[in-house]
Image 1: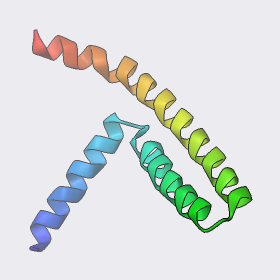
Image 2 (image 1 turned 120 degrees about the horizontal axis):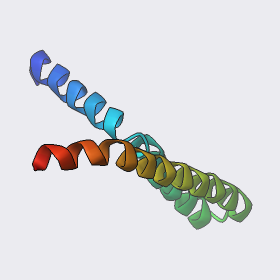
Image 3 (image 1 turned 120 degrees about the vertical axis):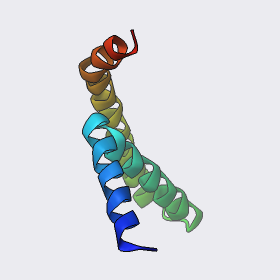
Length: 82
């Protein structure tokens, strides 16, 4: 992969995260939920429950931040479309 395309991808990711503050938290939620499922399949119920609780908190934080971003940036994008 050429170096220029890697920089372009990183710039796009940074731009996406700037407008969607909750995206990293929602990604962490998904990863933690997969870890919790793996722990549960290994029979580590207590640890799986703890990880699932942290996943839930990450989801709540991500959704709240997405709503804030929608309220902040949503009005600007609506006025651009008119």
